[in-house]
Image (cartoon, rainbow over all chains, first blue to last red; front, top):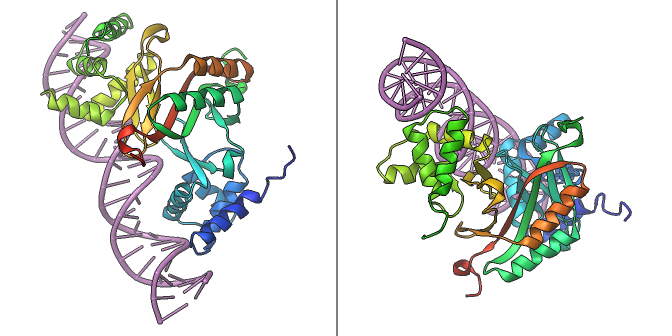
Length: 151
Length: 151
DNA sequence: ATACGTGCAAAATGTTTGCGGCTCA
DNA sequence: TGAGCCGCAAACATTTTGCACGTAT
């Protein structure tokens, strides 16, 4: 698959926001553009710092508010990797780019992975249980190559 | 709750603590006993309140300290279901009683489930990726039967 | 012009740390 | 007796809320 998905999410998000009646504000756009460039999930504070580093100063409260809006519109997913910080990442329509996470318990590195077999197993569980499942997340904890005990 | 494993975990935990050089304190025992009776994960504050309700007053800091000790000995697992609270549950030796969670995003109900197929898929991913995986957790979000939109 | 968007500061959690006193071994 | 255990209170860090001002429509 080519990199046909570089700036498309930001545009999709903007369209969806506009059609839902949101106005266009500078801070929200900045957060959206930043999120679009990320490979994996980022915490609110990482987002704030990254924007600040890029010369764009945004209020912390605004970052939280924007992330919350995007989350309720289904434009981002919130994930918890176990360190008590909420992280957010772009969610593509139709489940494209859907993935899960590997977390290094030593250095904190976060990496995405995908697995069809795993998705199938989850779908099967969802069908079997009494809950009406509409989302799921899987986190694998361990040590990344750099932090492996042996090396 | 007439399960075959009712008080065994508490005893196991106490033995393991003793053999690691820990002394036996009232507060720690209370937390362990409480955890043993739970079907699913509980937050530090739920634990504190449950103990208080049972007439056993324990300092909040102590609850956190005990949970942290138990976690580093591998006697409990810490899970995050996405609401920013750390929850803990008894972990049996050898991976017995290993399970994952269904979370109702409406009422917050938490239920355990198990699936061999899912475990196999995860083990396969763990083998394939460069990370040295030693733990994993899966959370399915949705609505429980009571909160289902249609019913 | 008006309602929404934004930043700042204060408040509200959840969690950790410091410390003095108690208790088990 | 002495090292660990415990409870209280203060410190911390993240997230939420209140409010005044700016800005898109």
